[in-house]
Length: 98
Image: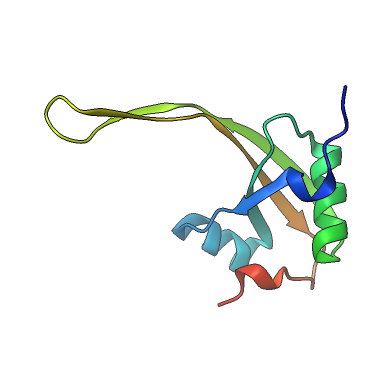
């Protein structure tokens, strides 16, 4: 299996009401990750990019969705993979700070 470059594993942060709560209260951060990335690769990428110690990583595959725009117009959102990363106590990722 081909190795994914470190800076391509983390696609973008997911900023929602729930992820903001998790970042503030539970010390967990949510990212969209490469579809073929695993927990070990996500842990290494977060530790190198943000210089924090990762305590735990959870991975979830988010299914594709079909939504309706107007009466007969449909839109398809493709499937994606997200990672919920818990960092060590007392450490923060500044990307999520408000």
